[in-house]
Length: 113
Length: 113
Image 1 (cartoon, rainbow over the protein chains, first blue to last red):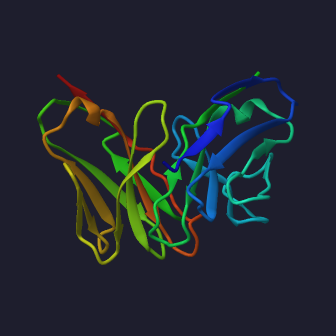
Image 2 (image 1 turned 180 degrees about the vertical axis):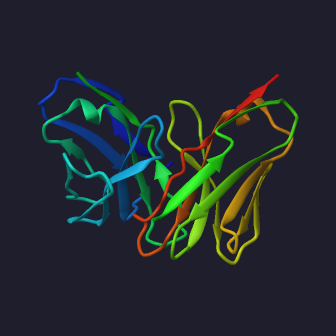
Image 3 (image 1 turned 30 degrees about the vertical axis):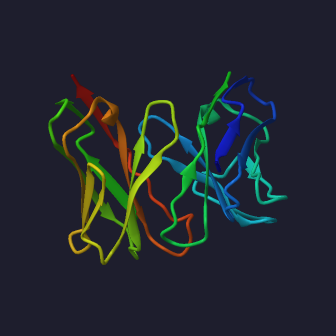
């Protein structure tokens, strides 16, 4: 069955370190997204991609970067982790249409000490 | 400003009872509205997607309604089950690209035996 996976599921790191969160989907979807979820907020979009070599900034992109070298993967990199980036991160993917469902991964809980 | 508000924030009901969750949104231009279910510690899962021309859409015991004129939506759960305990998130989409989803903060539903 097609799926979307994230790794690691839990990560503890220190302020200033570079961290990369992986997202892999086997749906063959063109669109991929990264969100963060914090208490008191709805899911907020960090970056998204509509296809290989395409990336776009979302609402809360500062301090994050992505690159899309193939259809299946969209890794999220925190260049220099900050305590404010402690959060739960979700990756999602979808087809191109405006009414197409976004399928979410299981999430990565990141703690920055 | 694009916004979405959900009520109540939390709700406790007894197994077998019905409940209705509310969503008010202000997005422009409006394209469609989604409801997601998010179990604790997991990624959101899509329940329904409704375009502006649809008033009602069902998915098993879940029925969503949409009034695009008053910018209100509701999610009705019939004959609740313990497995319905989750957060329910209203997500209006204001078109243009799939990056334009606004996630509500969710209603946390607890179903008690």
